[in-house]
Length: 113
Image (cartoon, rainbow, N blue to C red; front, side):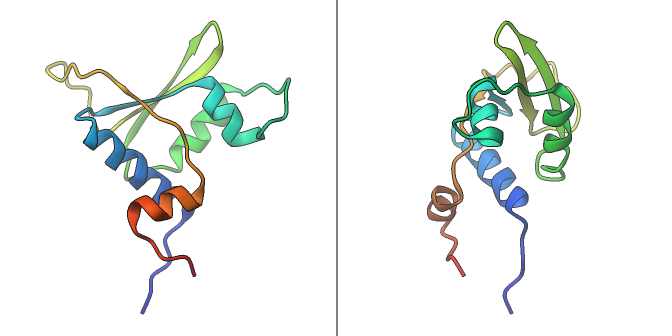
């Protein structure tokens, strides 16, 4: 019997596996990538830190911790694969995009139903 897994859980698994391939425990998603994910190609739209944070909360329990930071280009998201900060882990963050569902399905070997 097939089980149903939410799109956000599958996305979280994809991001975690991509970070593992790059041997890091930190994922950085830029403001431009987040804007494209939420709004598409609509220019002039702004993202609030609250919206990014709420979206990142949905990636739990696969990605247990996140932080929304600000830069001159707007807010960006840092996802952590460990539950507590570990000062001994000083890996560079993996800069990732948020791919479409077809790309995720192909990468993870999921058959579309």
